[in-house]
Structure formats: C-alpha cells, structure tokens
Length: 154
Image (cartoon, rainbow, N blue to C red; front, side, top):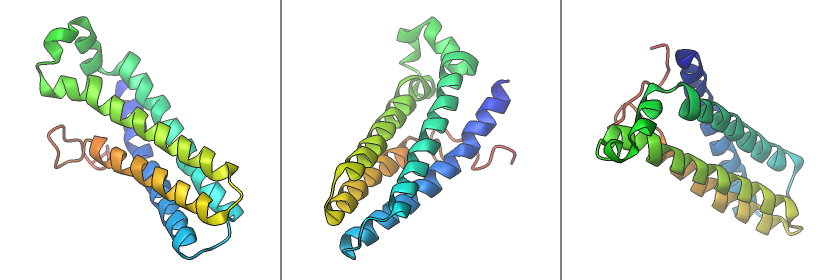
C-alpha cells in the first residue's frame, strides 16, 4: 500500500506543477496585459487548488499511516530531529507543502472576490507564485539531498 500511495503522490506532483504554472502564466498575462477576468482564469486556479488538495490528501496518508520514515520518526521525535532525512520528511516537507496549500487557496479566494480585473489577476499571480516557489523548494527533486525520482516507475 505504501508504494502505491507514494507513486500516486509522486505523479500528482506533475499535475500540481502544471496547473500551478498555467495559473501563474494566466494571472501575469491578465495583470500586465490588462485583460478581463475570464472563467478560464478562475478554472485554472480551481484546477491548481484541487490538484494541490488531492496531493495533500495523499501526502497526509503517507505522513500519518503508510510512510516507514514518519512512523519511525514519531516513535522518538527528539532523536529523529538530529537526522536530516527524517527531519525533512517529518517537519520540513509537510510544513512547506501546507504553506503552499494555504497560499494557493488565499490566491484563489481573493481572486474570486474582486471586481477589478487587474487586481484579481495581480492577487492570483502573487499568491500562486509564492505557492509554486514553496512547492519547488519542498519537493524532493533527484538533485536534492532527499532525492526521489522524477517519475516513480523509473
């Protein structure tokens, strides 16, 4: 079960990144191009937040139930904090991803409430950009100290 949930979590990362980048591009183009807020702008923000919500669900399943790293960490949390790998998974990764989730949802909520298109695009651009940057720093890329493959089946 651990491997299946981890593989799904690893694959959903690409949807999050794709929709996040699309949302950022649309927001910046709308903001600097002085474009009207369109249903597609809202929809891509929705896809970004929904994919991030889904990613968070699978991440929480790993964190709380399936990951041997976090389950062993919870048995002796103090000792685990001295181990950079266990600290990354138990504290750093989840903290960054929850922050990204919050920023993405703030961006979506603020962009839905406004009635001035430039402001809606600006708020979406700002918060979506922060969210995707936090995601990029929190993902265990193959070149990072907590390396994971780009695709789980490779």
